[in-house]
Length: 283
Image (cartoon, rainbow, N blue to C red; front, side):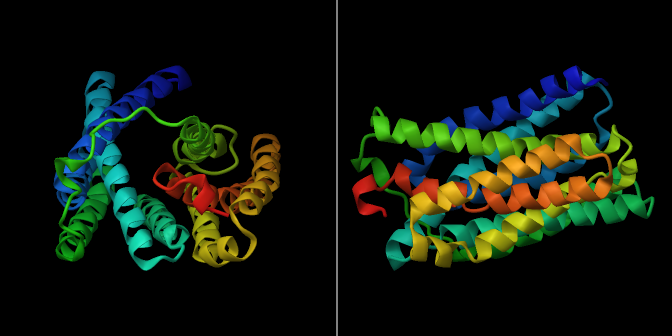
């Protein structure tokens, strides 16, 4: 398939995620994030091997849509859960939580890249990852908060203009992250910078840099505040994109992935609490 068809298929993934995110916000208000995290995680584990065996654009698009539903559900539920824990402790924890997300991205990219490099096949590689995902979700489920907020609060309210501004900033940030996760391998492989079996290395480096930045992010945010953290992340992101797009050799592109991951690492964790807290309560 060409880039146009791949873009349309990825749109199926995004459409499923957006629909699930809207519905998850309502379900979470009544039932809490615990059952949604379980359902979304198991859905990802089930659908991942299906992506490896989908043999037509229609089947792949349908599989990506269901995969996106699972991904959108667990994404919203996990972040709500993290915000609740951050409120309970009264300390900035979001960067640390998102660091685990980045570590998961790195682990998944490294695992599949390694398995494919050993010529073990797409189906086997994804089945191994699905088994690990299932074990992780089932193991973590008993320790999650069980209570929802119940129907006492309205299920939908019009957002304040400050929330809309934060939403725009978050959307721009996720465009950057989505470009790295969805297109990094093609940027490397189609320009003959890396072999196809090693295309996941770019995503690995991007995720490594995000994880490193987020592991220290809570301390950084606590010291310099939200605004400075956002501003300091801009320069490495722009520099990294220039390096990735214009790189004549793989080494420069790899450095670009690291810069983008480091710059973007704490932008989303800084923005998320603004969706539930008033800006006056933030630095």
